[in-house]
Length: 307
Ligand SMILES: C[S@@+](CC[C@H](N)C(=O)[O-])C[C@H]1O[C@@H](n2cnc3c(N)ncnc32)[C@H](O)[C@@H]1O
Image 1 (cartoon, rainbow, N blue to C red):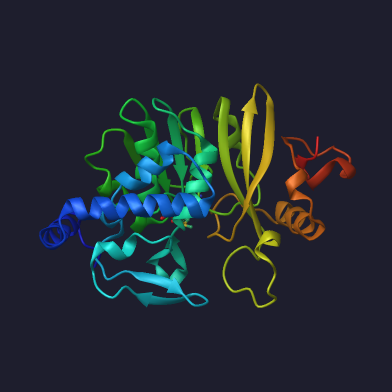
Image 2: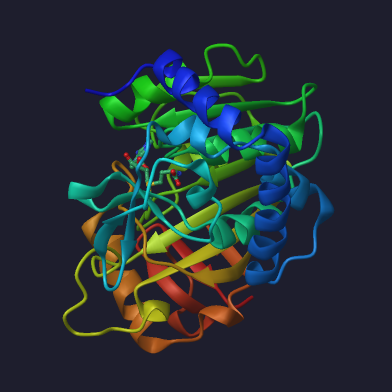
């Protein structure tokens, strides 16, 4: 049975007797430095957020399962939260391969999203909320985060984890459909084959969308040993008026996004990964009539193009 936030809090308190809270704070500061170094990111605000947020508050009672050695999950040696301060995935629903994401990948993407105090961030695929809390730290009390999670059980935990935090609104539902207020940042944490219309419609002028795109090979077993660069890519999309600038940020393999995958876009994406050239993409268009030679990806009603 999933422990209540109260049970998690009581258990964590026992650890605070053994390893003083100040010691964990020091561990977190070192963790934040390592995570940012691994990400190749120099951003004091992102580092401060990683140093401040308690990962154990979100992940339930330990020992925790961490995927090691080609996806086999191994329990941490004990339920000491110090084991969570590694640049490593932690299983949330291990039997489905659903994990709390790699800290250095998120540090890189959160830095690229560049949210500022006072802004509105929409977090899609929030899981149980660890990275939601990091985003909430970035926007501060004058800003807010709308966190959306599709899986019913995880959404319940997400809502409970933020019951007392005023700058976070946690919602169960499909983040490719559910209504939300216009956003400065839309931070998507699951693999789509295309941007959902609402993500582009609700992006404010100057707003940034962090968009992971994955082919059908972008999650799970990889018997053909396809390089990760040809399985998934995260693009940063920036709105300027009616235009959308696009830039490749990172390769990715990630859990699929419900409601933002379709067969036609998947075919176009698979062909684009096969062809290469993602790093030359500069624009996203919401139309399907561009000549192929201008495009990395040319789907029936949208495209990622070189100019
Ligand atoms: C890779 S997991 C990441 C979870 C979380 N960001 C973390 O790192 O702990 C992807 C999450 O996206 C959720 N998801 C998939 N499709 C979604 C959708 N359309 N709307 C909201 N959440 C979705 C999944 O249920 C899963 O929890």
